[in-house]
Amino acid sequence: MSSLPDFDPRLVPVVGVDAHLPIVPAAAQTPEALRARFAHPPRWEPEVLLEKKFMNREPAHASVLLAIMLREQPTVLLTERTAHLSTHSGQVAFPGGRADPGDATTADTALREAQEEVGLAPEFVEVLGTLPTYVTGSSFIITPVVALVRPDCVLQPNPYEVADLFEVPLAFLLDPANHRRHVFDRDGVHREWFSMPYQDSRKNHFIWGATAGMLRNFYRFMQA
Image 1: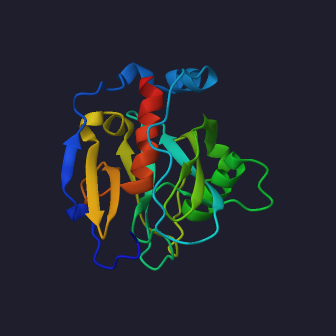
Image 2: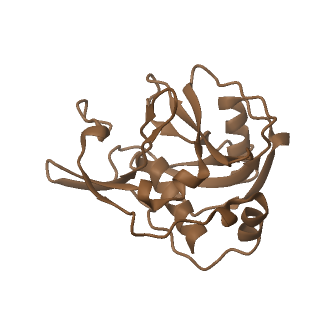
């Protein structure tokens, strides 16, 4: 879809909202509950794993950090990518990126990339575990690494990669009433995705595509 210069995901009609699904209770969102869930994960099935390919390129492994900030009300750290980047420019994303040969684990990739992108030092991060890989239409094979982050960390976004840095309440993302479904048909191609628009005091952040898909899988994991 990135090859369509006039494509704006905000304009694609909403075909459904999942308000009928259960909310993840607040008691399950505490640090202790999150640690326990990853230590003893439930039987569950991810909902979104593979996008239709829209870019012909060699597959590349990557990791992102689903960073849960330990504020009084937990939040999830997200970025808005700068407009000049070659893939997924201008989109809302988790901190993260391609794996390097020197990365021993997927968590190492996520932590290194988070430090490079937003200045998040690893000593502030407690890795809980990973979610299933998510394959984007641009051929990135992404491992989401879920972690708790101490609120006293100092973040310094890399202006080359990050246009904006913001946080969304974890409770908002784990409430399926905020999960919207979209369907897009063009030139014989059918695509579906989730969005989770979030309005803060500054702007409306349009969370969609791969980021929303991984958050939907996190919801399924937490709700199972």
